[in-house]
Image (tube, rainbow, N blue to C red):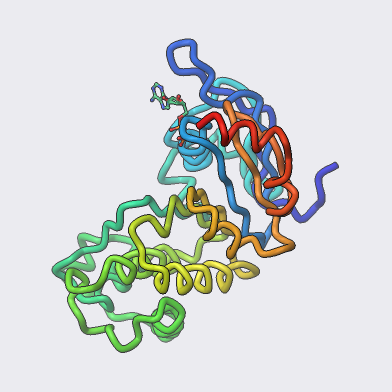
Length: 251
Ligand code: ADP
């Protein structure tokens, strides 16, 4: 029973590497505007799942839809990004020699090579988006600073900002708080929750305290294990699920 509000729809997805089922009949439904946390032990298939959503890996079977009309399995990686799915990897990849502002400008450019030569002027809608994003990621007073001089946390936020420049409908975020201070983690939780509603956000994360702060009482957490969803529900529910406890004790 899938609600009409589903933005990302994965059903019966399987993929094997050399006969090993990394993803095994995975079903996952993400609502429009939802913030979903995905947890699971090492090797559970979290990265492979993200690879399938973004078109980096093609599943052996199953279906994957984005919105009502976009069959993700028909599209290659660039076309999926174009359709509105942005992915942030764990390691930030900002352009260290450019300023914060320039990084955001570059992320908005259709053609990065052209931007680097012409510094094409932004229209007013683009300028508004850039200003809003600078405030959202907490870097308004750092706009002219070289990205290489930012702290680790600030670089992560800048990269999220760069993804926002493409106006994605779905953001996939891989372990955003690895290596962050507690204060940076709190700020990141604020940032990601503030994106929900306007965007759907899927966060893969190991840090359980962080997941608890993101999920709160009401948001859904999915636990992946051996390539499928082992348990799903509120953080309280999944943490008290005996199957989940068993899997984590075995780590
Ligand atoms: P997670 O991100 O949850 O740690 P992964 O998706 O990285 O899990 O991996 C799931 C399983 O699939 C692991 O056992 C991993 O070794 C295997 N795997 C992932 N990618 C490949 C690949 N390209 N070739 C072979 N095995 C892979």
